[in-house]
Structure formats: structure tokens, C-alpha cells
Image (cartoon, rainbow over all chains, first blue to last red; front, side, top):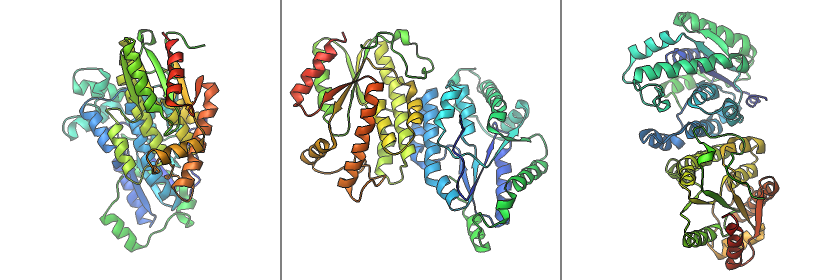
Length: 244
Length: 230
């Protein structure tokens, strides 16, 4: 079964994946700054951020209305909206679209929640296949340490409390993330992740990311295939970063 | 032959649902927009209740989770075709899991104004992949009976003009701009929807009912057939 639709557009799609606390967002942000400094048009898209379904997601979470199936479907709806309205038009325009989490997040999380691997892979078949998919591999304890040390209370669904793994939020979070980690590891070959060792220094990880990007997209980065911006455009874009 | 208990899923079992405990009957009224489904559903409900059956009636985009969101999305101007399909699928799953399955467990007759078939027909009419949407909707339960109120596009057109007296943006498929104006787009879009439903008829064991009969005739035909389910 061919996984996802090949990207036939001028632009390129780069995605990062990994469990919470793997450092993927930091790395993607650094990569996009570098691409911007090369005067390439860059756009961002974040998982679960579509304004169209925001109210529905909020209602479902607040009242604990979600089941594994509806949780999976509402995230796919969110994803479809960002893809149809934002990602594909930008790829057509020749931009590099950087996505913080992609369909693979659903392949991992939704399966842990109880939907079948086969069903969720079919669900995202309309998605554009990324040109580069980075997976930030990190041992569970390292990621947990980063999360627990860094911020406030973990939310109900974030901790996978809906799975009933444990009544203790921290313990539930640990078990949930552990299972997600297993799903990511199991799909690494299947989806062709570029695996980054996320225990390395931030600088070392970023160097690897840039090397891989140059190697895989090198020609496109320099032959004018991608959208090029003037310095003025870049300053304006940095003043008002668009996140969807 | 109508399927016997226990009810089955099309291709994908819902997590946490045991088919053996589903005691009620699941009856679907399908058909394109404006074909007269809701009139029949409300008459059937009254009739079934007279017979002593407890009835749950439900329909597209009426769920507690996603119903409002879908209405709001349709009022805007940025709802893409795949997004719309998946939003409706979310609503369907919510109603299936939180309304239909509990009602079937409790022995109700569930009467649903449209099911996955309209959802799939609309997706197919918008050039989405048939196999994709069939698999997405594969967690649906196979109903005890699916009645397909069939009319051709010119009958629908007459009903729209004589009924509401105006074209609806979504019922005309204007999001896809199938034609220069609402009328042209309506004809092309509804033709595609009807064709998609016709193609499902055999595969999904639809009982085809001619929607050009009078409402009384249709009601009698449905009643006769539904009576045999008990």
C-alpha cells in the first residue's frame, strides 16, 4: 500500500516527529531560521492548530467526550483543513513547509489509544508525503525529565488519562509516552524516517539536520526551484511569523 | 435476505463495542437532498412508537461533539472537500458510539436519516477516492435495512423550487463550482451524488423505493417492509 501521496509540487515538505520532550520543535525552529537566512520562503504548520475545528476539539476535551475513533477523526479533520487550505497552496507556491508533527503522530498516538494500525494509515492516505521526515529518538526517561522539569501540570489527554492506564497523571503520562515511543520505533523503517539521536547536544543535532537537508534537497535549495524571498520579505516574515 | 443478529461492522470493529449486546434494530433512510426523507422518518417514528417500540431518531451533523462545528464551518468560506468529509465522519462516529450503539444496547429501534452512504456519496461526488472513504467509514454497523429513496435530478430540482424556493450553497456543490451558477452546479453535483448512491445500491443491499410516489404510498411501502424486521 503506497503510504501518502507523492509531493508533485515545487515546494518541499519537512516534518519532525518524536515523543513530547524529544526537542523536535526547537530543532525545527533552528532549521527554518537557517533556511530563511538562505532566503528561502518558509512556512510553519503545527499539529492540532486549525481554527476550523478548534471549538469542537475544545468542547470534546472539556467534557471528555472523545472516544479513540472520534479523537482520531477530529485530528484528521484538523490536519485535512491545514493541508487543503494552507500546506498544499504553499507547496504549489514553492515554499518549504515545516510541519511540527505530521500524520505519523496519528499513526503512533491513535494506535496507542486503540484504533487499528491499518485504519489510521488509510485515514491519512490523502496526505502529501514529506520530502524529509526527521524522527527525534530519545529514551523515555530523558524526555520525561525534560517535560516534568520544564512546565506546569500535564493535561488530561496529553497524559493519556482517557486510556485508564493509571490514576496518577505522571504515571499515566509515562506509560502513554512509552507506548507511543514503541509505535514510533516500529514504524521507522516503514515510513523512512531520518533518525536523529536526540540525546546529543542541540548544536550537534542541528548540524545533522542541516547536513541531511542539504544532501536531500541540495539542488532544490540552490537552483531557484523554491520560492526565494528578498531581504525585505524575510524581515517582514520574521516580524510576524505565521503559525497554523 | 436481511442480516440476522448479531450486527456486524463493515470492515473495522469499533474499539470497546461487543456486537452480541446490540439488541435493537438499525434502520436507515437514505437518499439525496430534498427527496422527502425527514417526512418519512417522522411518520415512521410515530408508527413504530404506536407499535410499542422505543425509537431513537438521528441524522447527519446532529451529534453533540461536532454538529455545531460543522454548521459553523459551513457558514464560513474555507471548508475544503476532504476536511468536510472528515468532519462529517467525526460527527457520524460520535453519534454511532454515543447515541446509536447505546440505543441498540437498550433495545431501541434506531431510525437514522442518512448514514455513511450520503457521506460517502458526497465525497465521491467531490472526486475523493471511493476506497479511501469506504475504509474510513468501515467502522459503521451494517444496518438491518437501508431504504434508498430514489429520485432523478429533475425531480429533486422540482422539489427544491416548489419547496424552499431557493438553492442551497452546499446542496448545489458550489464549494466545487460544478457549474456557472447554483442551478447548473446543482444539476451536475446532484447527478454525481445520485450516481454514487446508485452504484452503492447492490453492494450495500439497499432497498430501493421510488421517491416519485406520493408520501402516503412511500410510507405504506416502508411500513410494510419494516414490519417484517420484527
